[in-house]
Image 1 (cartoon, rainbow, N blue to C red):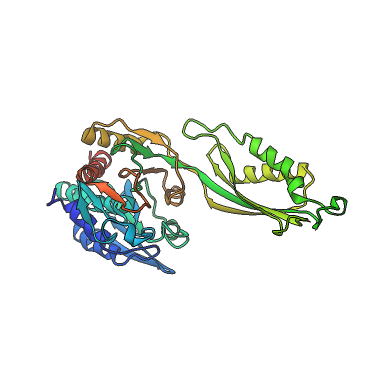
Image 2: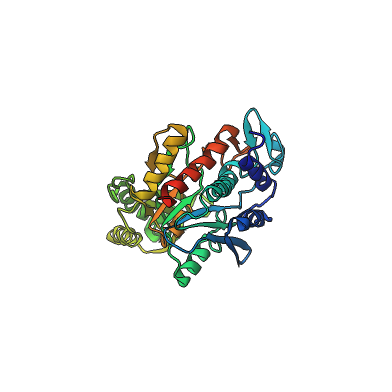
Length: 378
C-alpha cells in the first residue's frame, strides 16, 4: 500500500491546510495531474473561494466527479494525536483533517481517471471535475457559481458522483441518492410587556404562542415517500424574558427548521405554518431562510453503475439513502438529472483525529474507475 498513487496524492492534499474557504493550492495539485490526461482546466474565483471546472472530451454523456478541497477547522490541535495537517498512518489508519471529508475521495477520483484514460484513451462521452473550496462554509461562492456558469454556457451534464463520505460500517454499504431540503424560520411572537402581578395589563407572548407551537409540533407535514422519511419540523432555540422573574416579556423569539423531502415544497410548508399561526390569532413576524432544496435521483443508470462497481470490488450490497444534512449535490441537481454521493465511512468526519482506514483507499479508487467503465465504455 505504501506505493499507492491514491494514498500519495491524498497525503499531499491533507498536507495543505485548506480550512474553508481556503484552497491552499490543492486545486493546482489536481490541475497538474489532470492536464496531462487531456483535461481542459478552468479556475473560477468568486470572492475568497477557488473553484475548478475541468473537462476531458466534448461529447455526451458527461460524467462529473464533484467535491471540495476545503475542510472544517481542526479544533484544539493539542487534542490531536498527531498534527492535523501532517498526514500520519497509525494502526492501519490515515489520520489528518480531510482524510475522510473528502480529500481521499478527490485523490481517488483523479487516479481512477488516470487509470481509465490510460486503458481507454478513446472512450465515449466526457469526464469532468467540479471542485470547490466553499462546501464547508456558506456555499455561496462555490459549486453554485460554477453550476450557474455552466448553465449560462449551455453545458449539459448527465451523471455526477459527489465524493461525500457516505459509507457507514464498511466501504460501499450506503450511497446517497438524494438529500432533504433545509428551510429555517425565525418567528417573533408579539405581546405586551408588563408587571407579572398585573397580567390583565399585559399580553404574555409565551402563553399566546404555546397552543400554536403545540399544533406545529403535532402537525404531520407529509408521509415521505419511497426514498424519504416524513418531513421533520424542529425548534432549535426559544428566547423570551428580560432576565427578571417579575416581568412579563414583550416578545418571544423561536428559531425552527424543516428538513423536508420531495413530498413537500418550501412554499407549501411556509403557507401551512402561516395558516396555523393565523388560526391562533397571533401577532407575529416570521423571517424565512431557504438554505437548500431537496433533490432525488431515483434508481436508474447512475445508481446501477455505481452499485455494480461496489459489488464487483467489495462484494457489498449497497443501500440507497437520503439521510443526513445538505450537500453541494443540491446545486448540481439543478443542472444534472442524476446525482449520487459516494465516499468512505463517515464516522470520524469533523472530529478530532479524523481518519480513513488505509485498506479502503485503493478500493475506493477502483470503484470510481469501474463506474467510469460501466458508463463510458461500449
